[in-house]
Image (cartoon, rainbow, N blue to C red; front, side, top):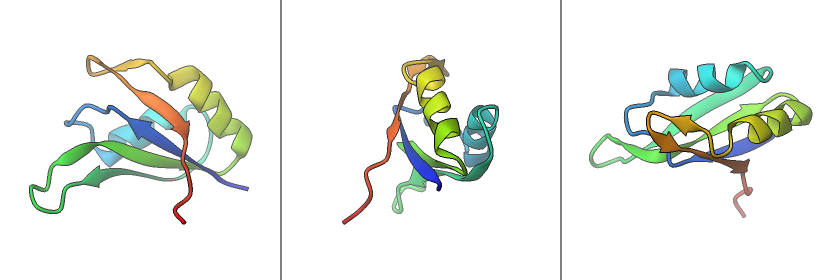
Length: 83
């Protein structure tokens, strides 16, 4: 079963590939994306990472939540599914 994580307070300069590389050390990633503002084409400062295994996602949360990335403390939590 896969688990999707919300990653907040990201530096605006981070790319999807950067995000994927940051989380890849914790397990196999199905996908990683940064949310982009459709009008300005700039990052909104948050994104999502989906892991293949739940235990890998939990390890990433423990290791990266409140860690500093580009002089910002990122928040890593389990994503809440859309209704």
